[in-house]
Length: 140
Image (tube, rainbow, N blue to C red; front, side, top):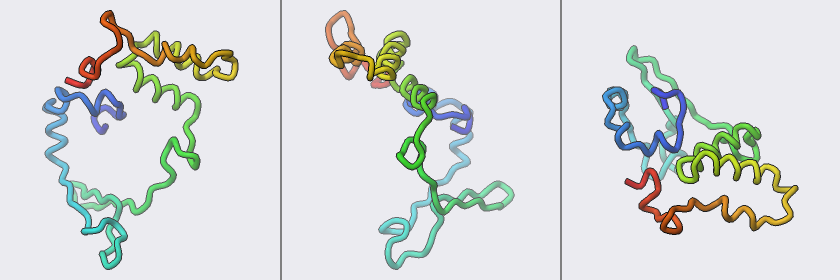
């Protein structure tokens, strides 16, 4: 995320990328420290920040709360954000053109007379029938 300035389903499942020297250099700078037993805010535990980052110069940055997460009722995604996320998740499986057709169909669902038409767009087809989980792009 820090290197690419974004986070995608593909990037977090790319095992080869996890061995990239730039990723490994950044990973070496990170140390995870578990919170108190029972979790944050458990009775009898000291108050700890949700996240704390200590910079190379010793400066500490802390975050104690998180606002409403994007995509929840309290902080809904825009139409454009929803389409971008859907495309990112579906394209590796369905392909670009089928993903585009599916998104267009879902975004105009109120005009559809037969919702069953979505079924064929929701399935990736191969010459040998339905796709097997082992054929999924990130399964290997």
